[in-house]
Length: 229
Image (tube, rainbow, N blue to C red; front, side, top):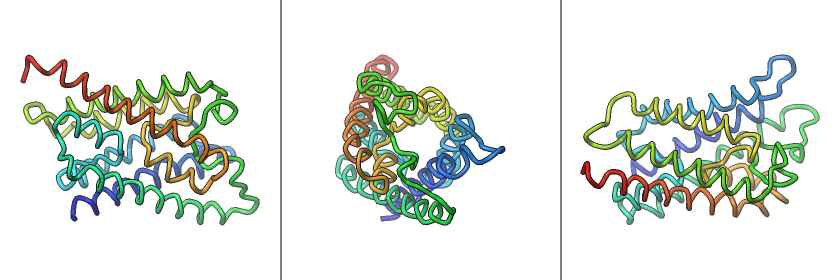
């Protein structure tokens, strides 16, 4: 139960900090933080929570990460569904808070964007479904592969959270123009349900691609670590 509470709080923080920076601060007049600021915000949420709850739950904050760790034998399958459930609930709760805050601004129009992920006409750079699928799958695969390697028992150090946070920052710098960057089904769900409409219709991709990416990352880890282990 402590681990599930930690995952809920951690994913809440990820969406509140990461998506919040995109919704509230990315294009704020004259002092907007832009893509770089949003990318750093997502990375910082992971770094801070990894130090805060890593010893409690492992700080997955992401169904694709939980899936990849389970495939790699680093997480119990009996905890798989509960972890994903609380991650999604944490993301939805944070999305609700962001919706309340954003509504406090005069003229707020959620149809103009709510840090939701999309492809085609709903991609920030109007990238195709194929491009979005490739990006989300490969970036998630490398994210999971990095996590598995830097958290190995024989290599784990106090700087592992920094490596993970920087990798997520890099992923966002690459993918924000493509899909607004998901690599995390919970993060996508947490804001999509408030955006509604097209965001819900396209949400399937941001579950399928990251989960496939998590599988690929885990298989790459198992393949490249066989001789070492």
